[in-house]
Structure formats: structure tokens, C-alpha cells
Image (cartoon, rainbow, N blue to C red; front, side, top):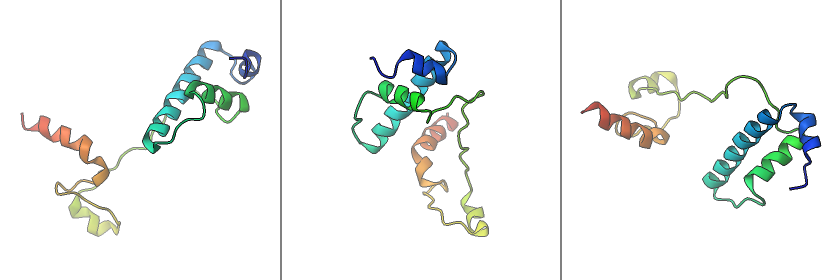
Length: 109
């Protein structure tokens, strides 16, 4: 791979080890997004990640990756909060159904 060059990448990220970690994490994110949407990637995920780093669209910020917390609201409170949410038969939000089903099996044992 000739482009982006190492010199271009090192201008954006001053440490080779940090560059590898940043590119690897972004490549994983790109691959996961493509898998979830079902869209084929125009190039390999690592190449796309390195292109984004060279372009300056991906910038390293020190500290852990911050993810949005998942909020579980009991069905009893949903009426008082004036929210438009879909609950399953267990009183949980539908998008958390698979993950929480595994948790419920472990509780009974």
C-alpha cells in the first residue's frame, strides 16, 4: 500500500503504535457497520480507516471509547414518562430482547 504514505499518517498521529491501534479500531467499526447494513465495502476496511486518518476525519482523543448507555425502563413507568416505546412480553424494549433473554436463563439456575 503506497497511499496514504507513512509520512502523511505520521503527521496526523505522532506515534506508530497509536496509529496501528487507531486504524485497527476504526477498521473494526467500518467492518461492523458494513455487516449490519449489508452494504459491500469499496475497499478493505483497513485501507478505508487509513484513508480517513490521513484525511483528518478520524482524530485520536485520549481516554476510553465512550458508548451510549442502554436505558431499561420498566413497563409500569413507561406510561408516566410519556414515551413512545415498544415493550416485549417481559416488559423490556424490543431491541434488547436477544441479549436479555440470555441473562434471564442464567438467573433461574
